[in-house]
Length: 106
Image (cartoon, rainbow, N blue to C red):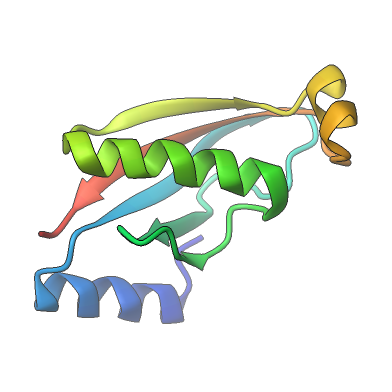
């Protein structure tokens, strides 16, 4: 969910005219690190405000978000954390997350 601190960060970034991507989990299946509605902000330098679960999952979301920011086109990104992928990366989750990546500001 967008917590109070993240909402303050979003407002500040918009007021400053800064570009960023708002990443929101819109669908999950199976075991995932966060639930539907959880959001984070990805900045052009790769920093993340908030969290979508950390680790390899968050790194993949960050990489895709930076591409979305470059193209300035929103995207629905499916992150597959199923057993084969998760085991190979040392992750404990084994589900699928759909994350909506929305470029904002700038």
